Length: 90
Image (cartoon, rainbow, N blue to C red; front, side, top):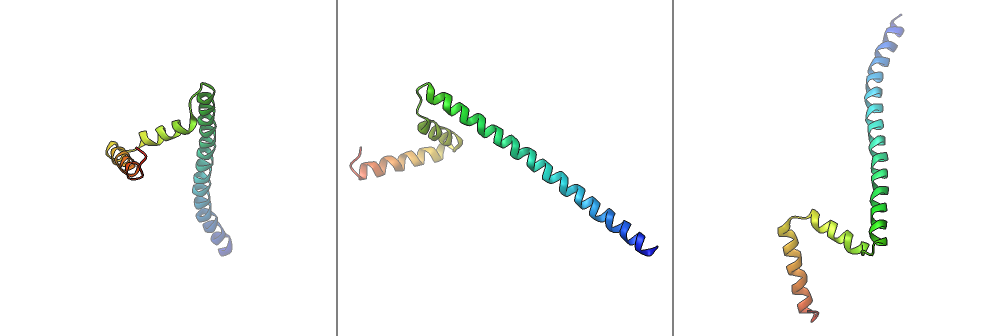
């Protein structure tokens, strides 16, 4: 009888942990699927932009710049200009 009580306690402990773990894994899996779908949507938009005559490489650069802080962008542009002038490029 003691063995049955011990098993029930173990089942409850592991059951709670297993349920929590399963919940976390399932949430992560759902988000991974959403991310995959979003990545596909973004790819489609870039393809649309390309077919409309836009340069996708430049679009990606613009997206990256827009994520940055304005002061950081200005500093990078200033350094780029300085380096280009130092190399006789502008």
